[in-house]
Length: 263
Figure (tube, rainbow, N blue to C red):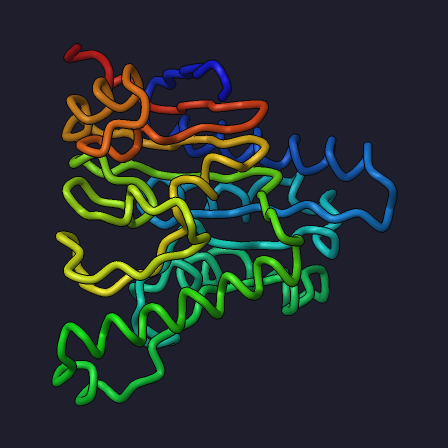
């Protein structure tokens, strides 16, 4: 468990700039300090704050200095929809940054470890029962667990995990009142009946998220003020899932003034 630190930036634009530049410095420092054959595993998130960060990464000149062939990309959670659905976190990241790095030959496609997509026809998805959806989600979650372990060993962890938080205090796809926040014997779980569309999702578990070496929480917006106060001050409260956020060496919250000023 790490002591939480808080950085408050003037606005969301500065937050995105600062997060992007900080990420690039961390990548450069880590890759320069390690033997040339060693990799860096980075887990991303969706959401407006993270997407703004990716857009800034695409514009930052330090991006060209990173050896992306040694960087492996994962996601803390994913919307369980078709692979070409614009709701997919991975697709949004690809469009903003990753596809260009792949096209330039700098990032191997094999370094992008997406969570499984829903391959069922739309008609089958619409007609599926809860039990059928649960079985499909569990199979997809198990497949991603296998990939995590095959890449990172029996006790996988990220070098850096970047998360976001919703106005209800959820992080990844772990929501208040849902049982997945309490699951500790899995790496990845399926989530059905998500209160935020789309209804079906996959998520790393809280225990896997907390095992990351460094964890950053990017969250901003006046609508998140109450959730931020509860999650930052508390620990491991199922009513405020983002309170489970942790990192082995760093647990950093990055936000904008509008999120904390009303407090």
